[in-house]
Image (cartoon, rainbow, N blue to C red; front, side, top):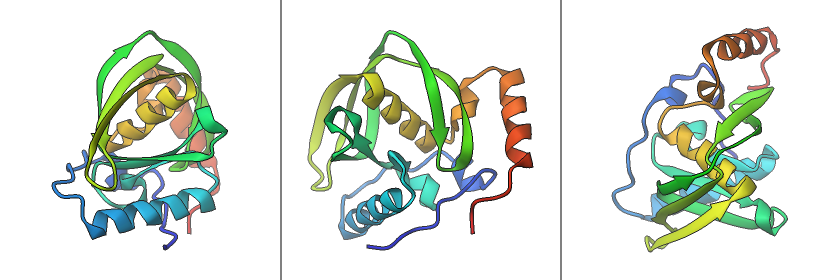
Length: 168
């Protein structure tokens, strides 16, 4: 397993819509393993492939419903149902040290593939729902500040530009 470089805004890979994974193969499994190592190294709770420079529909996250002990790996994740609404603070490894309140669906049903290429589907709410939505946004070229109003987004971008870079 390798530690990959986490891409930070304004890296353009973060703004591209990711391609679906056609075949779950050794290369994708290796990417999952490297993403897990990278997320742990960065003390994150979720990571999408574009954040490590790969425009593929792959996400990983720690499941907060199990004290962040269980890892979820999802290839080609899709939200197939969403309900309710909840606002809470979010941050992002690609926009370090910046946080803001973001409105998300409270409950979602998600389907995707596991590392063996087998399809699965589950419903979730609370923090897990939020993390999944955040990571799937990355696959669509969206950042958390794209989910707030234009004035708030501009303030966040100005604040971010003033921060010293954390990336190598």
